Amino acid sequence: MIILKIGGGGSIDHAAIVSDLKLLTEPFIIVHGANHLRDQLANRLSVERKVLTSVSGYDSVYSDEEAIDLLMMAYAGLANKRLVALCQQHGINAVGLSGLDGRAVVAKRNAGIRVRENGKNIMVHDRSGKPISVNKGLIDLLLSNGYVPLLCVPLIDEQGSAVNSENDDIVALFQRTMGAETVIHLIEAKGYLSDPTDAGAVVSRLSSAEITQALVGSTGRIKRKLLSISRLLENGVSRVIIADGRVEHPIQKALAGEGTIIS
Image 1 (tube, rainbow, N blue to C red):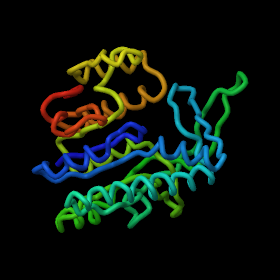
Image 2: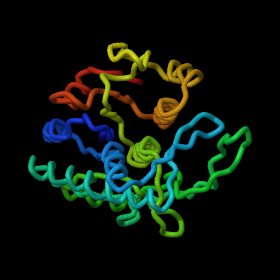
Image 3: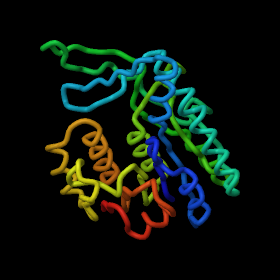
Image 4: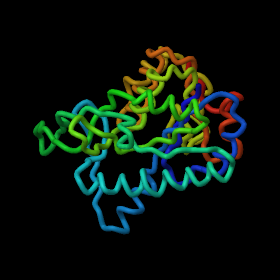
């Protein structure tokens, strides 16, 4: 099985990705983002987006009720259904789900995020959580009947409320639950870059030891991504591929060795 994570950047070529899906010969699950679309909607609706940085150096979007509404519009609405439509146009019988639908992904609400503000450590509470379980029965039912699950946030928490979460954590949970051997991340870069300011500084291969070493000097979003990849390796995934989601035949090129292969 393959788990395909499609980044939410504005230059991701969804048509090229979906066109490639029909060439896959093994079952696959898709987890997608929509941050570019979310930010566009936020601007149009004059909703301010706030990013929190924890004292341990991880960035996350502050998720209040207004932010959750944006997720429902951008992720579970426009992005998800546009991808479902593209899949249907290419003969792929996709079913679009958020974590809310059929309790597809349950999260545990975060106790709070400890941040540094005005020289003090404070605890900030919002509607975010960590994914803790997948409705495997639902996913297996879809896969066994020829449907392709296409998943996104929001997730559902213990009280039945919608919460935001990190796609990398959702992917790691799906990999562990479904036993996927390959995880492909399609992003707005040619692969993992040793220098984020140099688009050509692609690292072709990384080991688990090198991932651990890279974590030491990382901050922000890349630190969170590296941590999630290290967890995938701990879970027993055979390979993680970080590849360009802006090119023709992105999946086939990723499987052929383009981008960064982590094993």
